[in-house]
Length: 422
Ligand code: ATP
Ligand code: MG
Image (cartoon, rainbow, N blue to C red):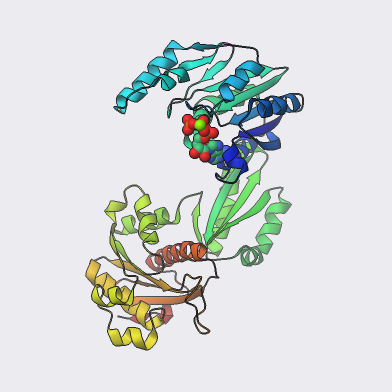
């Protein structure tokens, strides 16, 4: 069973949009046991669509196309496919009613172009879109299935989950690949590999596949088996061995945001949290708020970027700032303590650092970041050196702070003995 992904859109070719659809489709189809033979990105032209299909149909069993199904003139995939498969468009009454309802519910005016979204090829299976107005289409030619989906990522995923994947599972009862992912923070992939070398040899010896998937601040560890879901329990047991070995770094089994793991811990313990942010500029707050139900433990934040704000809003003594600088153990410790008092939360996280690209010195180069956590009784502060990319520094500071708070709450901070009494 071989598949091709055909991503249609000039914006993908010129780098204006990152092709996240192809990545998601690749992952989902692979998980189903369908091998991705090729993934092409092509222009929004009928000619490019036709030549690609000519080349791909004899090569693979399934082609998933995305993009160009919208209501505007630049969206011509539907017409190009209609022409290619020798069929015509006709208004589909059921789909038209759905589109009318879609606009009614949103109290939006419906235009002629929207009505045209109900014009669909006569000879195809229509794939319902419960998240938007562009239906997906399923064609078959010379033993090859050709599926066309909208480009908008959440609409594409919706149709795949609701309409396509269940059908593919029925048609191709292939052995699904089963995998689980362990999420780690604050440990680089080579360090991680070194720490779990014996475990890695063991799991590989047992026939499992292991992949290290790094992204800024986080390394995901994916363990997979080609024997399908029957391996779920064994895979989870094996991953738990790593979790037990590295509790300061492993924050979840399964792709859960770090802020959600922290949130659950706070909720279990009936604790509240707040943040006092300088270099992370509110990013920790944003991560916490993203999690549904966070109002039960997240109380608020103070973003104190300048010296003046640190002094006036947070009450950091002027002398302390001028003597040590904002990026120092003394100031970060004071920020956490004052923040906890001002916000009145059980836990307070503070950040202060030099995100760059300018502002670094010999002693404090760009990427120097201090993070502190306190519960009002002890305060723990730690310095990090992240690197010279501003965006990455903000992202990594945010994740590092969340993980430090997680370890603090769990009482597993390796260096807790170094913490200062408030
Ligand atoms: P629309 O109804 O919005 O016109 P469409 O099916 O015509 O949907 P496009 O016009 O190709 O799709 O793209 C719509 C939006 O989805 C754009 O913002 C585009 O950047 C995004 N998009 C398109 N293809 C991809 C892709 N492969 N990966 C990620 N985003 C994509
Ligand atoms: Mg479009």
